[in-house]
Image (cartoon, rainbow, N blue to C red; front, side, top):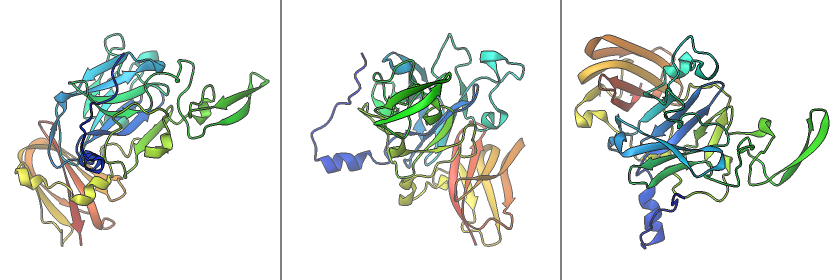
Length: 328
């Protein structure tokens, strides 16, 4: 059985807790949609790029301790996200091979696990736990709860507990008592199935020990099934200490900031493949795809855009840089 508790250093408790804030990656969004619409978003709250080859995504299926894991790759820029999507892109796919929604495909930084029998990590559903782990075996973040009392027949976790509900089962009145937030057969109360869950902005680090009880509402907000608009950007209180400035590493420059005439210039040391504009609520408002191997672009904001927004620039090497812009 996998050891879930991290080794602890005996230091002052408040110093230990403080040092964990905004210091490592965590899972910022969980998509369990219809069909094969499945995705995991990671967020880098630090001021430095992080090499993803040092990390695994891991699925613990149906209340078991047996891991399905896959090693990641690439780099996640400071204060930026990385979106992994199940690799089902065949428009002719049927049954288990049905294609992932095009809107979700457009959000992907990587596609994982095309063949179920080779790697099952991205085939999670409501009663599976998902973790982010380092290649050393240390757990960085846990979504849900690993192992029992979750069982294979349970649907997942909800927002209520210690409640007995009477429902109609094939015309027969049936009772079920929810405990430990596990909804059992009451699939319509399940948050972890057929929903998109977004980590609350107040969360600044991952869950590093297996929780006794997974209370979804503590750290997660729920939005409807097959909602993908919020992928690729995460609001986090770590940003209150200052969002990263891509100009510092001289790979991307965005100027002037603030913009006095509703226009900015974006230049990169490498070729730019896309530019995204995100408003202060996290809504994606514009996407510019650059196919001409360009290293510069001038962007003009629409009349409705004002105040603070974020510009996300994706480079040919798949690195991503995000900067906060003030529009006067």
